[in-house]
Amino acid sequence: MEEIHFDAQVDITDKVCPLTFVKAKVSLEELEEGEVLAIRMNDGEPVQNVPRSIKEEGHRILKLVDNEDGTYTLYVRKVEEE
Image (cartoon, rainbow, N blue to C red; front, side):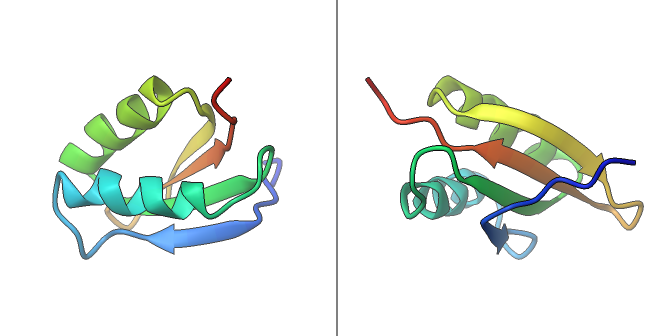
């Protein structure tokens, strides 16, 4: 499996919606355009809501990986708003 290289990571497994998205968004805002953020989150609501919300913000979802421990890692490339 191809490994994705990322510039920063954030663990939101200790947060609940809507704070999961808020924490992910703040972490994305700290990156430069084109950098990749790895977001570790719990299965369930975060996996359903965070990728959708990030995509709605205009960022590019690269991959969602099942860590096989009840968590997922979402890789997102930051895209600057035009």
